[in-house]
Image (cartoon, rainbow over all chains, first blue to last red):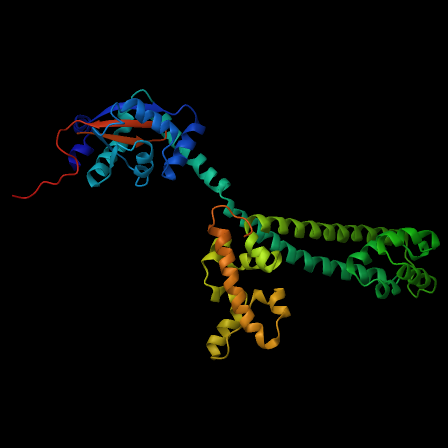
Length: 363
Length: 31
């Protein structure tokens, strides 16, 4: 048997090509390949069988197939057609694959390998693009960027405060919010500009009559040193960056919320999108998170404390990232551990629904 | 009973027919 398969001459005597259905376009080839990989019978394939197997609707012939899942879907379309797959048919298919170019003499060998390569590329591309579950990569990056932005905005705001405080030190005590402070600096530019005429614009930013009055009063008796126009231009440019970064952070948080609603709606409904995203990021992907047992989810993010506890035989941590959930925050001190365990169980369930349920929606 | 082989390739579907009469998949028993 082995020899008859390796030798082309003998193999040609063993099997005879009955029919061939060439794909008309790369798209058609791709859709057929996708059906085969999912174990489904494509309409092209069904048509081909019906055309070329005269007795397809009777039980007078048997069809050998390569794919293990295909017989089930063939049975659905052609109930009387018996399918088979065993070691001998596999061997013969090996021969068919080896000698196919010689059977298809109308095609150039180079064209065949080019078609194979093109189809392989298209198939891989469609697998990567079409996989909704891979969308969790965006969550990973956005939560990491959100943390980075928080740090950066804070550092930059401190710099703006320090810099502008040489000129108008009283402002930092009146306006404590970093973004509002940057907006005020952008508007004021120089404390000489703080007059009653600036009140409506300051009101727009700060929305508090009292605070605006305090600023105007403080500007009159300010201790800060004077600043040239060149200095104030630099500070103004810098505040622009801080303000735009703050705006970007707000947009990014909104984006993360919508992404979490698409990728992991149940998890984000349970513990919120930020904590949910942190869990996914810590696990590496939604799929990995779904595969973790609830006990691992409970201490995710507290690995250092866990291994230290295991080493020193002391108490293991009760919670990791889950600590930031409002459920833990609201629980009494003696119940925090219990709530964490309970919450981890629910998170595990939710992430599994999100990862494996065919149509993901908040349930 | 005739046995047909359905082969899916990058270029299209091919249908082959086994010409030998012996039953595929039956094993030869030792005497």
